[in-house]
Length: 311
Ligand SMILES: [Zn+2]
Image (cartoon, rainbow, N blue to C red):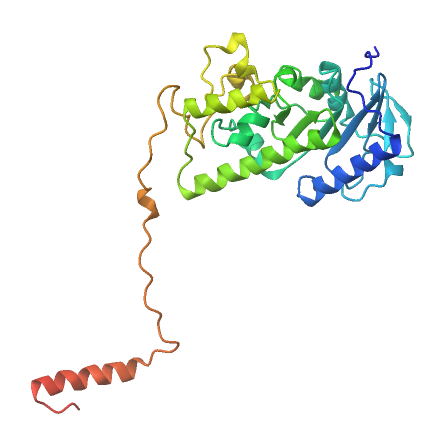
């Protein structure tokens, strides 16, 4: 079934859109988000035409002539190379979100570590993440490639712009290729910061008032967030309440990171971690230690004190 054209559909020439996909491919590859031939990118050209990356090609070295075009069912319309096997994931998202034109899927290591650990992404830590991403779901694991795998995103796709795919990677989407990519880059940087902060000893959560101010900004800038909707009025804005009910089905549970303080109880300043006591550095040892000389000097000193002659 063809979708009606959306008012946001791009009027850019096809050659420019192809260049944009190749450019984002290079950024994904250079960031280390797509090893080998991993990852795929797509752009909706019209009601029943989607430009996409081919299978078995490094995303860092694509030329515009490598790209293919498929219909909304995934049948290849044009292109010399075979379309990506994960295109059904992209098309499912486009069908669920008619205003979305572009989908980016890759395996960014820090976000994928959360996918493997099945650790929910803590909320209310960084302002940019609250404003641009919000609560981030982890989908149910399914063998990649088919429609069954693509369907795993359906429960979340209307309430998020980036999803973590259990034991696999990420998928993000937006009106343009660059925007679709941004959410992945922000998410992976956030996951890395969380890991580094945890290594330092603690993660400090924003207070519910501080987070509320960010949600107000988000609303003012025209970004939607399920936490701003009427049915989430009584939810705890920092407690991953938007997707929490899915955790049982997806094997997600909180282990590595503490739960944020309950709403109304602000994060207390934490005393320095007791393990972070550093011993003063020992004086540097001389390059070579001549024990015989030391023993001789000490013996002579002792003998002098005792008024006897050392042997
Ligand atoms: Zn993948």
